Amino acid sequence: MSLPNDLKITLSPQEVEFLTESEMITILPRYSMNKLELITDDIPKLMAMHRIQVPLWYALILKQQRKCSIVPPNWLNHKSLKEFFQSEVTELNQFSKLPHNWLELSKIFFENAADDLSDEPAKLKSLIQDLKELRLIKVKKGLSLINESHLQLDNLSILEINEIRPFVVEVMGKLTKLKQVITNEIDEDRLEDRDNDDDLME
Amino acid sequence: MSYYDIDDIIGDSQRLPCKFNTDAKGLGWLEGNPGKDMKSGTKLELPFWISEILAISTISSDSDITFIELLQPDALNKKVLNAIKTSSISLDLHSISTNYYSLVEKWAGLYNDEELVQVIGDMLKERSDEINNYAQNFKGNQQESGFLYSLDEFEKKLYKITHESYKNLKKWLNNQ
Image (cartoon, rainbow over all chains, first blue to last red; front, top):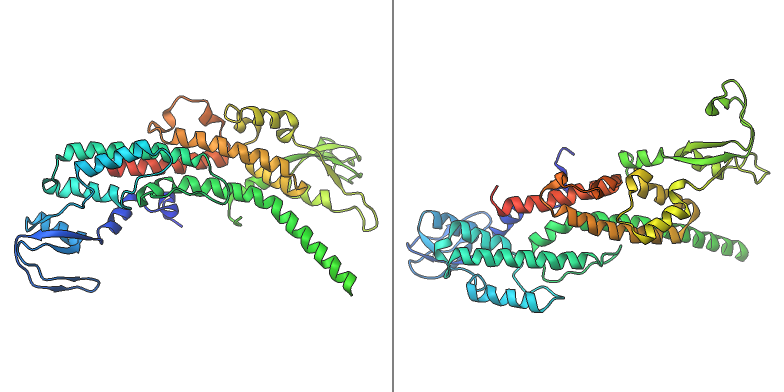
């Protein structure tokens, strides 16, 4: 009950970032290390200069100690982002197929592994920013179609859904409540009709 | 609705105009006439929680007359509804009623007023879209706008949580 309201109705961006950190990512270790058996995950044996998949949080620890370089995902470069941006501009009625964690992942990369990116981080950053704003405008357009039962926005990432969740839930809740006032009444009428029918049968 | 929902409690205590169909003994003080009886035909504003009951219960078991008759509140008359239909965004909802949506819910529930729900539903869609626009502005409530002052309690809450959500993401993106 004492939880702040914004934590009760949706996940905070920090929580989403935390969830993303348990996803797998490819790294290129600079040292060899034996296998680690942890309670939730097993960290496989690392061999120097052999690509391997590890959880993102582990990759970040190694990166901080300069023991590996992280391989950026195939969409996090100037060319792909530019393509996503293009498709975002040309296809006005749908969102481009960015991965569900593009915002978190790109932020983590910019902050912790900027030197592993193949292009200039500042350029990528501004592209990400542009994508974010462009998509937000589309979201706004989609939200004007809101009704009490249904809202479909495909290819939206977790953070973007999170951002609009409080608004959408509240408005749809109110619309449902308004509609219910009427439908309840009708249901009651039907029930009464049925009762009357039963009486007749007897 | 929850028992502890303060908005529901406030909504329940909104006053509705109603007309007495019967003499009420010793209730003259309600109309500033202490010690006297209240005549039938007197018009009074009573809170929703009691007018709702009195409007459906009959004086005695063998008569059709109810204690009071509900009159249409000003907030729901033709003039206001027409104003809503023409331009819901420029309407000052807060001055019409601070808990407009809960009033509509209760009234529409009593009279099964489908048209009213339709009109108010459309208004909510239009106004919420505008609220969303304002919520994205990071100046918050320092923006100079009459619109934010015209929100009713539900819309205020909506504005607040929406604004909070946009602000949180922005903060996180900027590492603040």
